[in-house]
Image 1 (cartoon, rainbow, N blue to C red):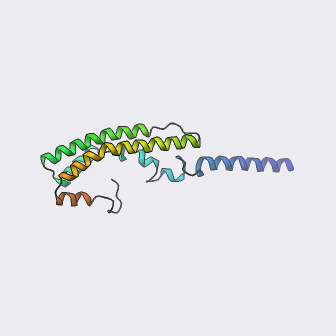
Image 2: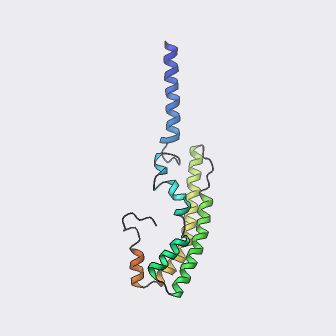
Image 3: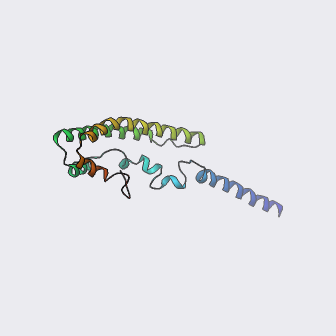
Length: 151
């Protein structure tokens, strides 16, 4: 009877530790919170990265830019494509197996995001500076103050 009890307790301890390692480790890249709308999956999803052609067209229809503004918007789209490549490289799945590996992956992704922002920001600031008050108001209406903001 003692042997059966020892086997049951050991199996519970092993399975509980395994479950905790795969799901409950704080900062885990594969845990419960990382797959939601604000988790790693969204951060590294191709549709979340950059200005795709349909977004450019949509912004152009919304703002009705002048020729100069349209050229700046196209330049911003080119910068965005380069940023998308940087983020895609930083988000490549390396099959993380250890907590040190998770930290390295997080650091690589943060560096990729920082580089992407530095690629996009100058072009965006130029484009934004070229907009008039009405166009800025329309663009700002899409921003974080809007409920359900996704851009």
